[in-house]
Image 1: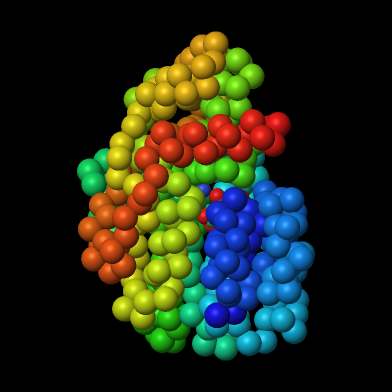
Image 2 (image 1 turned 60 degrees about the vertical axis):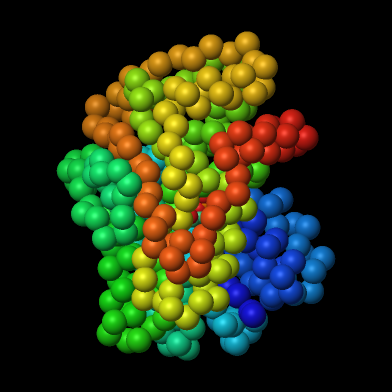
Length: 323
Ligand SMILES: NC(=O)c1ccc[n+]([C@@H]2O[C@H](COP(=O)([O-])OP(=O)(O)OC[C@H]3O[C@@H](n4cnc5c(N)ncnc54)[C@H](O)[C@@H]3O)[C@@H](O)[C@H]2O)c1
């Protein structure tokens, strides 16, 4: 299989590149290295089955590269990501996530190439239903709260993808990732685990925004990429939306305590009100727990790593790489 992975130099993308190259697939990455890193993909460049195009998905010329003439699948991961990044770069984020996906879908449709679209659990917004099912309502906040622009831009991506599927018969799959983590994820853009682990390793205070009672389910990136691979290889999955993640809940306070214990750290937890970090207009999602019924039914999805396995992998990676 010959795959184009947009955002392939990022956290999830670089793990997917590695997995697909090991499977014997050919991989082409388009990435503008805005939040991704060349370091993540450097070692693949020795492999003749790997091509890196340094380019922006918003620039249609990025898709003129001859290596893209005969691709079999597009896995579209490029996006503006991370609560902090979205709040600090609102215009760029909305443009990347809306216009970028539109360009990808147009390109795919012009050659009838199947597409996997990366969406997010954030599309459920403030819906506190447990567990969240793919056809549950989206409960979105006010447009005055810029945090919701990410959820809305991804929801629009979903609408557009499904429209291409129904109207143009373009084979499209949508994967809603719940908190995905593992080695190579950066804490710089608002991702909680890398930030907590880094501070714990340095014995610095661990900052929890809000009261720490927010519930999340963390999934190892290795489980997520296997799910993506199984989904794109099964015809019945096209035209469908899937939750992808683990369904074991943990509060952010419990997570911080676990990280302190696993790293044998002297760090203390520091609770910081949201408004001190994100300004007055900020809202969070209190619970995010997926129903995995659908993805189990279609591809027999089972995640292998629990939160301790995930954290130990990240701690090891950070220690080895001096992060
Ligand atoms: N990590 C998670 O927990 C999570 C959760 C839900 C959804 N997602 C989605 O998964 C996808 C991958 O996220 P990630 O965690 O690997 O983040 P990431 O920031 O590591 O990866 C995104 C990649 O896209 C690239 N990129 C951004 N804008 C681009 C543009 N205009 N042109 C070309 N490349 C561009 C970045 O440089 C980066 O390499 C995203 O679509 C994200 O919304 C991730």
